[in-house]
Image (cartoon, rainbow, N blue to C red; front, side):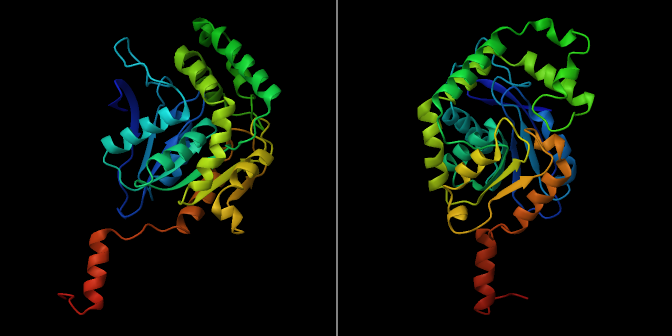
Length: 305
């Protein structure tokens, strides 16, 4: 694990070595609410031999904890996308594909808009929306606030409680390892960040802005939906995807994963990795400026060889 300062907050991240083909983009993974970078490990193991991969903990989650000296900033999608831009700049990443899960998918979409000069494409996992249903959102926000405020710190030591987390939001029970990790991340999330990210990203204004962001993105954007996802049902994934030009032009930018709930990256990592590899193979990286110059010279007969 390495640490980088972003806006006065130490952010934990991991960056795999570059592959033998350095022209490939860096895959940047963005986790969801009350989670951490750890959930990307199954995908990293499959993709790192072919792509350099970056995973990091969002501000206030995992090991990216604000300190008493940190500058207090908002927790809306734009703020997290600005954090992402600073991360890419700080690590000197100029060609990236963003891969976001749930809330991380929304951050990835905003990030592609803010950092269009760096981001070559987006893959959203279990992320959708764009429809504001007042009663449902109010119920969700109320439950979320109670969930965050009432979690005692000793909860992670409660015997067998991790068994509840292996079944929550998934189509089939996860291994107990993931139940334990989910419990740790749930208890350990910074209260201000957990509440801020919940409340600031689910306002009517934020929900209605997301389709506008998707509609103006020039980069390719793909959506992977869990067929049995009860948190972000496929119909809401389809709705948000429909605003992108790939969908409007008849392209299939929505991929439904069978027997999968809301945590596709740990429920079905093999399928997700295969679909991601297929998507990336259809969008090879553009030549660098030096490569383009060499091609022009070759066409004109200036090749020194």
